[in-house]
Image (cartoon, rainbow, N blue to C red; front, side, top):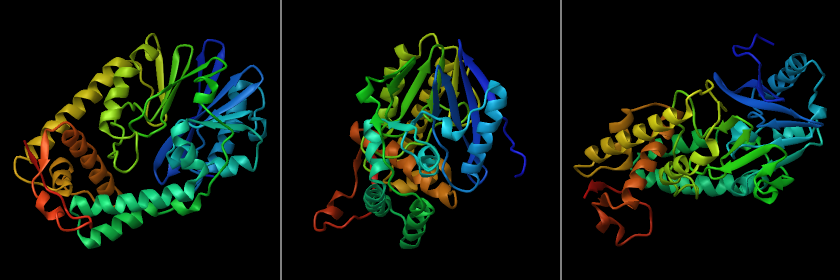
Length: 339
């Protein structure tokens, strides 16, 4: 195996060791799994994607963690697996782990069906995404390409059992406190171990977490996300270090939260400016992101769609061509204009 560009790293939450294990979840895209040793419990938070080298890197990372902990910890020793949220780069390794360990697996209620009824979820979201793309104003060629990109590799995962949900535990697991922060993902949960936060994808140190419209998945979207940034203030108070599931640790979390909030306010204003004249979501995405290619084009459309949805819900914009919907039940490109 080629050398890993990111090191396995040990942190401490008082007397609890936390080991960060980097995984290449997609080509040249990395995420972290976290191993916690609490008494007799060996808890893994997130699993990687299960694609490419992700599973092998998890196993190798456990060996390195053993040397850092000065005691052997193997996959078979895991007692619990906690999934921070229902995106495949965080739960896709579950089938591999289920074959190697009897650890009990937990996730938030709102992401439970994503893992246990995966095929149903994939079919439903593909259908919703298809309608969203038509309404966004993409061409037929772009429509087929973007749907294919969305489904690429997703059929490699299959429904996997979950043993318990976080709300059923009272959002507490031993010394681990949990807090639900929907927005980036419906069931996104952050974890607090004494003064250290494991914050998943909710806050990242360099980039702003991806937003998609709630029309695709309930309890996502920019409105839920911004509300979560406010709701978590008491939960994070006094934390000295924040460890995200991607990118670098965060030492000044309040400043980072304010930076993300300002980023979205500026993006909303830029979207409003673009809609001084009627624009489709695709045209708004071009104003925000120019014209990205490949999977980035899908991400740009979803991000633009989340901001347009937020503005529409708050009566900042209206549909300029509503008459096009009057005589059809088929999805048609919608044009939005500032009110």
